[in-house]
Amino acid sequence: MKKISIGIIAGLTVVLLFSFSALYELSNKTAEVNTFDNIVVFAESKPVKDYTVIGHLKAPTISFGQADGFSAGRDYLVEKCKESYPTGEGLILDCSKTKLSADVITFKK
Image (cartoon, rainbow, N blue to C red; front, side):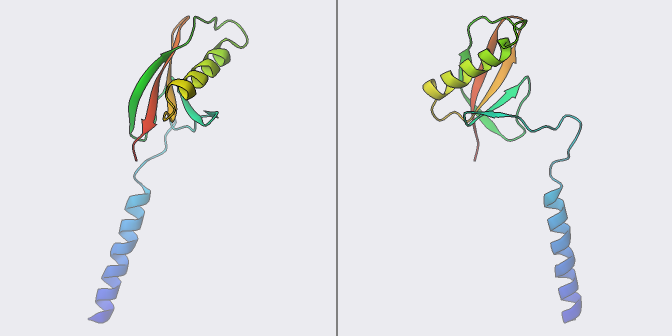
């Protein structure tokens, strides 16, 4: 009886360990994003982890045709995030033809 109980407990433990490790399935859309000055930047994408939007920022009109157009706008938004939202942990960038804006987010604990 004792051996059966130990076997059942061991089996349940293994099943639970495998079920928790398979909570999120990798796909072709799964990626790791870059961090700039400790701000996680999502360009035209959203984090998988739960988050709260704490603000919105807009960059000046930029030209995406320029070699550094996107980078300059991104860097501007990262700088403004650090100044205006010191608790901000990330930016979700929204890129249009000539405008770049971002939602400032914090991750839920």
